[in-house]
Length: 555
Image (cartoon, rainbow, N blue to C red; front, top):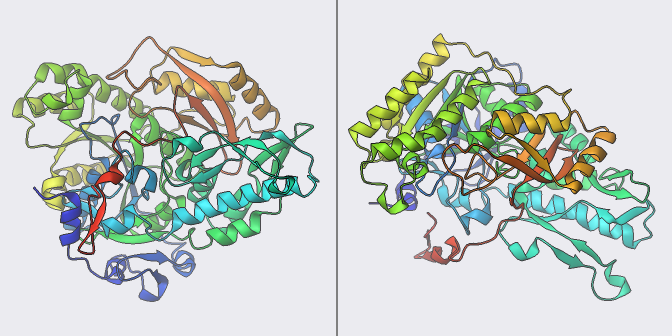
């Protein structure tokens, strides 16, 4: 069996201008990065701004397991299938982070015969967006420390610096560090921290900004520290906004590549959904909607994280809403949730499936609260038995959802036709009545409680004293009406990654809260979740190499 990278490397790509032409984009409206990658120009964005919007389809999934779910694979396969049906369709994805690519998981390119290409470029440096984000973030950090060194005219309390440095690599030793060691000329000694670039506020801002003016406005509001009197100090106060915008100028433009079947793919921005808001950029999604009849986009990790944040944060900020939701599961993952060991998932086990399907049940119930029609799809494996498939189909339909099998890993767009037909039927015959989970005027505590109880299934929320204090401070400073971004493990509906299925009788534990004032949301850190991941005992990097001028081992 060929690996994903072997399939991708054997693919016959067409020039990106041919891909763009499918959406009536002229060559002169592309900023080319070689033959197969391009950024979309501001001229294009202005030209089509009065076009009507197409239909938006959100793809999400159950909680991830070692068995695999294939959310991105289904997104790509569905986009390809819609193209085969003659629809003017595109997909909108996130960019992968280098940290996980070399660390603990696969990339964000899909798999099998439902991938976006060039896959190696995408999973490595791509068009340099993440490097620009990292540079802008660390410029602000450098200017902050320099301001203190040069006299501290803003009266910054060095014990209340909240801006962290970042890098796009998993590196646990950078979580908590000391800077400024050495002589007086080497700066003030203080404790400092790193987050991974995809968890940075700059990433969130880039993904939520409508244009350069909006980007600069959001950058200006970033809170970097507090004064001795407890007043916030912003990036605007440090006069860093212009230079940061300059670093982000090209990164702000959405990227276009293609699927294996040459479906247009907008790939732009990539915050994690477990520690950030987990969606591709507003700019890319809105542009895709203006250029396509149907846009298929994805949200990160399970529906309790990515979908909730897409619906409550991105849709709120961007003024968009999905017309249909596709919820992805696999028989294997459901059996894993039912207590089957990873080594035994290939064996038929309907009883375990019945136990594990409660995880899918909860995600269905969660999504139904938002008022958008749902189709559940099984990303099918060859080991799935007829009895197992029949059980899930009956279960899903009894929950009032449409159901379709997807064979997109093996068959590409052809394997997604059954799903595409269900999606088109929903778009043509059912109307979404979209509503968000909570209103802006609710208190931050009430918003957190609402998400914890209605989405996670918790009984309530516990706060550390520090978190309580931060909530009060954030509210006092005028940020209480912002939406909430919950940082939580992706492996469980609870904040304990070992609790599979549909946990009950638990509380969500909030240990820290901070405001991303520029991005426009408040982050609540739950359980043991980290904003700087570490590498596993055997990092993925050990298998990556260059052989005969070809990259190998990259998934």
